Length: 139
Image (cartoon, rainbow, N blue to C red; front, side):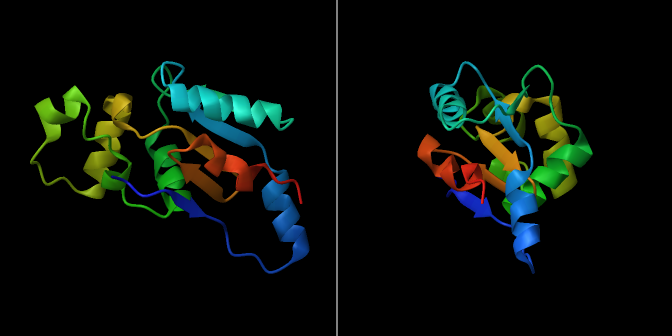
């Protein structure tokens, strides 16, 4: 199982911290996923209106996905959902490089773990939805 990953940018001043936390929240969301819906509801209940990206309809670009992975501080394979049928049919047992996994997730976005919440240089992935709370703080 993929362990929860949270990464906050290294900052050198209170201003930088406030800037990071004042940034727009983005959720890479799958409305069919109960945990993704719960995370979105938790974000909204905290008073935030995130930018919602339904990544199955609008997958991130290669550069966007690379930036998300950098913010999560994980390798592309760690973001892959191995229980998806497309993984079993097309990718199981293959030894792909990072760029190839990124391309595979763009081609088949259902392979991406969810939900992913990004704010500034911080990102969080997975469950439970309550794990998003550090990104909701405003100061």
